[in-house]
Length: 196
Image 1 (cartoon, rainbow, N blue to C red):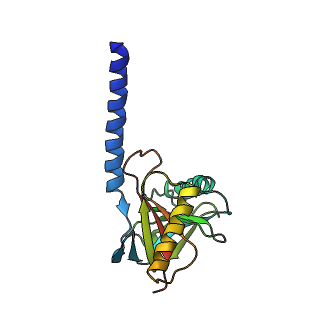
Image 2: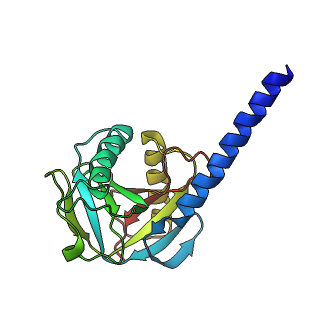
Image 3: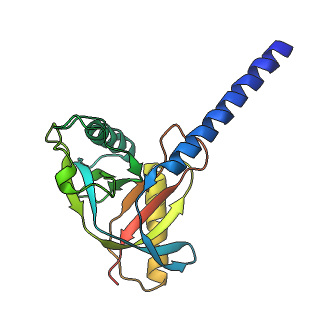
């Protein structure tokens, strides 16, 4: 019995230490900059500047299927699947366009890199492009994203925007800040473009 308890304690300690290291690594990952311009009960308004992204287009499918496909494609590009075999630093968050007609996944490129410095993708399923500056409403949630959770938060944010008489587009983006193996302190966001 003592042996089983000892093994259990070692396993729990290992998991806790691993999560501490993973959380620290996530916090040290470069995150894109934005300006918070207003705060409301339950959401905030932000302005994002223009950014370069590596993006892949996806067919309309479930969040889980598209997140796996999209991540694999774009991660391949930043991990050396490009014309220069260049390793490009991972940034946070990963962005998914969840609209019916233009589903995609994008990684934001490091802010100190220009379009001329970025190598071309090896395949035609990843595109380097400029993400235009935008003004958005943002709602956060913890835990893991799922189709159900994303839709619930999208509807919640639309309801909050309507209550505040803020004009918005009827589609959204999902921002994920953590690797799938991070179990605690997870940060997820739904953003909707606004027109004021």
